[in-house]
Image 1 (tube, rainbow, N blue to C red):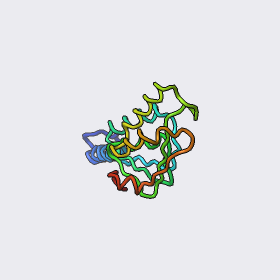
Image 2: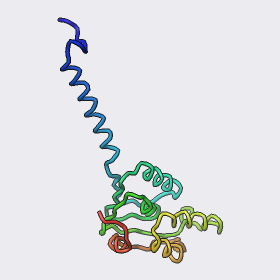
Image 3: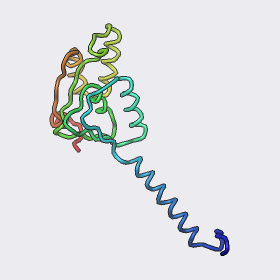
Length: 153
């Protein structure tokens, strides 16, 4: 049996090229798949800020769904390509260190950092009221945020 070579087997070359193109299309499509966030209790503000910046740099679609999005999860509201479910409950509170108060400078820094991720009406409310709640959370429905101008899924 003769060895396979590109010139002698044009169907093989077309097949390999087709397979590579198909795989590349799948990879490209994977980059445009939405990033779905559901039932997220939050985490570290700094880490979430970096994640939001990466999602924005990738122009990645983010869908906030599920029953709840609490604490630093709400920073996803700063993603440029975003939609939210009207049924999701968003929970807001001020910055703390595992529930302990921060010194005034840190509190102000992290409050402002969080607020930058919210649209004007929500940002104003957060800076005026919600950031001072350290224990517990203020809950707002996705439907109410949609009424404030956030896009619905």
